[in-house]
Image 1 (cartoon, rainbow, N blue to C red):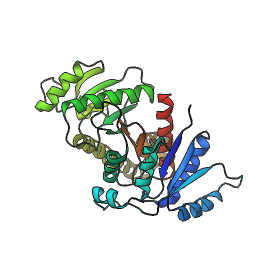
Image 2: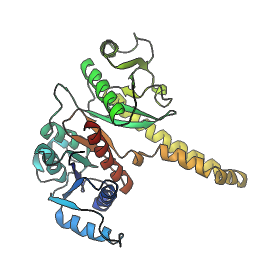
Image 3: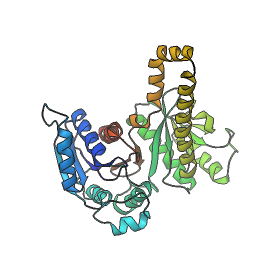
Image 4: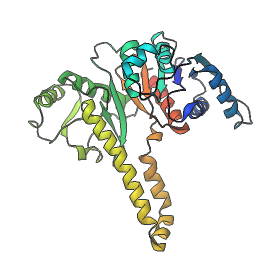
Length: 327
């Protein structure tokens, strides 16, 4: 693998620089060949890293470069205004690091809206790509399904949906190891004539492409694992994503409540602890790490705003796996 440098926004997450920087430490242990550039207030990063280093008495297992960026873009700021005015923010400086070619990947747990605006301002799209797509891996009965777009493009054209299918299939084949990814178009029914004129035209484009297009898929077909790539616009995709997150969290809470309701059920919970642990892990967003933007010349991964150490480590891991798939 060619030398890979990944820039990491240390200031954008809800949990502060500590969680992000320790996640970078874990990533550097797992992938010692990569270079990590930490972006943020340098004094804060140095102090934070010194405190984290105390957890590793065997010595510092990492080497980082620092890119000083004293400003932070908040989640409540208007994205277009923030990107324009806060030129020394960790997000803008990290994206500029991509633009200059000094980094090949960028991870941020900051504002999704600001990150999207920044991508259009600083990061080149792959030749012929109309719009980059934000995607995420959803756990299913049979493994994982890639959902895209899930928030970057609320309004699309049929040609965009075709490209989303192509980008998603490429990702699942080369990064996730799915030999011939099944691609489906998210719709209100499985029949070809279902949906709006836009979806009907997109169906025709997908059907006549060289993709392994299996037709329309209803929302319930996604968790059933009927496809490897689920294509939709960003509005529908974001609703599917948030519903999946909320439903899984609610169900796990309800199951735990019922298991704690009596002595007998508590005993059953102890016996089934391993199974429930494995199930919980499948629905844990931290195991995936973040949502990559596909269709760019460099990989940008949007980590969850509340990402902890594990989530950041796995977000960086996504950049590494994507880079390896391209080499």
